[in-house]
Image (cartoon, rainbow, N blue to C red; front, side, top):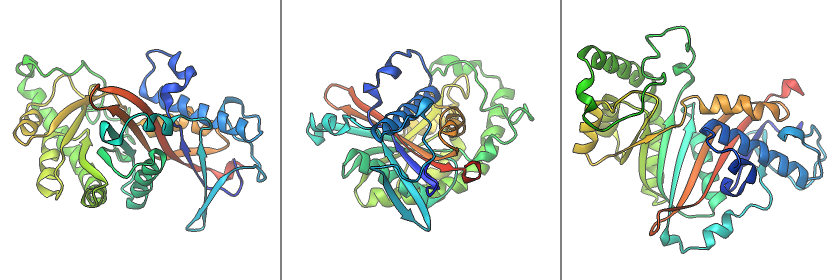
Length: 321
């Protein structure tokens, strides 16, 4: 990695046209993200005349055709996959016929990081507005004691797929109490940070750049508190398929009563950490992913996924250079 760079942003472009990813049917989200990053780094390195095995970046300060930004005495290297077709795909349909959805993964309640993340998505797609943004805030405190406290892990370990049916009746009162306690502990840990980040997202809505907001992986009690506090109410709530066997009745009831769309997802809560280990840590000394945004563009009338990509920011460990 460039000796002068302390941060690097990586724009994978449209991953739907990456043949290597298409060949790996059934891969999970972490594998898709890490493979997308490695392929982007490899193609970018080849474009700049460097041999980059396994997606690693040559440690040199004389590479050509780089975009370097200096912010707060820190140099940021912007890497975009060459020969990407995002703009061509966006131009195939009128903007009014496209629906852009973005999910932001972030582990710190940094307003500067969140703004940088969103602005990077706007820049990558060259669009003035985004239909929906979902916030996935997972501070490290939630994962710090993994494997040490089985009781604390109740709400985050894998279980049966979610069902919206009559399975609710099968939950015992003890199980519901445990879920409520886990929900309360998690809410206490994440709600203050969510509010800090949510206020930033509300500014984008006020400016007309984002139309609706959503939040991922909060329980019914936490969603109620956020809903009561927020100026812009959450319109979407996502719940992880691996978090519980059924949708918590309280969460289901609240979403129905307040016109909140309840969706499921399969994104791991430690996505940034695991993806960094799998991909970015191999790329010349990068050690963490600060944030990552996944964008998906659908054609409204047909419901077709036109393009999908990631924009991420990594911190470089200069001590390893």
